[in-house]
Amino acid sequence: MPLITETELKKQIKNRSFSPIYVLFGSEQLYVRQYTKLLCEAVAGKTPSDFNFHRFGGEVDLDTLASAIGVVPFMSEYNCVLVTDIFLDTLTADDLEKFKAICKMKAEGTVLIVSMPSYVPKRNAKAWEAIQKRAQKDGSVIKFEQPDDNKLEKYIGKWVNQQGKFISRLNASHLIKLCGKDMTRLKNEVDKLCAYTSGEEISMDAIDLLVAQTLEAKIFSLSDQVLAGRGDDAFRTLQQLFYQKEEPVMMLYVLSNAFTDAYRVRVADESGVPLKTLAEDFAYGKRTFALERARRSTKNVSTEALRRCLDVLSEADNKMKSVKINERLFLEQLIAQLLLLAKEGKR
Image (cartoon, rainbow, N blue to C red; front, side, top):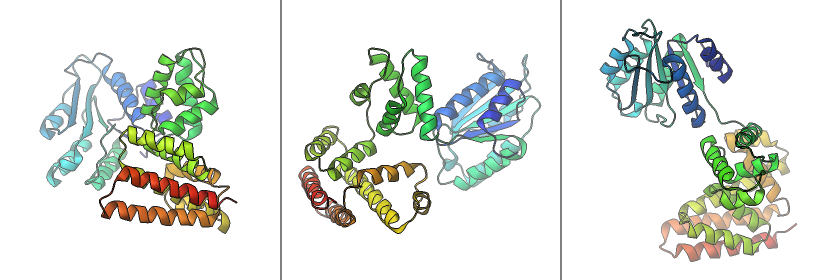
């Protein structure tokens, strides 16, 4: 059986037509956790018996896991075995083969659920792929990817409405820009906004006041302010980053990426290369939105000015990594230099 969809998983849960093995994983960890919980409750009940529900995680004793799969359901239709975030990277080659063999096991009435809500194997990535393929032969594998902006805006609206409040699509989009696309974080921010906002509507001012931005979002704002020539705002943002104890090296790295995005999209536009092709060539994936934003923020700055800004940022990176400096003063001087280049390159 190939990868199944969220809709197909819902149908299996509703009809109680369970596969002998499930593998749930993906970049959208909130969904992995939610559907793992729903699946376990459907198979074993909301208050399962210790006889019919066996949970493992992290460093798993594979012999005990194999024994749990062989348990005959007691006063229940199913025996549910949940394996959460198993540390595949720490398993030996023999243990990996043993785990693959366990995934092949079939026991009447047993449903094995392998869920990876937060742990992503890196060293044994091929073994993880092999486990998925093995599970697809006998069971169901579902990969939860992060939704696009339109779906995220709808989710945000739904969460806000459930708490008796309202948020516009514009403000929902602004919330995504500030804290990124991770649904767990978005849900937490929505809960915070609903709890601390007076009135029925979640306003832009409330979002700016209460929502903690990601470093990338803050640097995006900083680069926009620099390119727009808003020096006071740029230095205010920089001081906020220092106050929040962001790492200067990381700040410079993200700022360089923002200007790189701007230069790439400018050259692509001048060469007639579609944005989609540019995103594919440089493997932007879910970060394609960064190119769209860069295009908007640099429309009044010349290509030569963007090129000179990149040269300055490259020199700054080399200096910060090779010479002992006052990093705060160094970044302040860098922002001043970028502001001057952007001003000189107005078109």
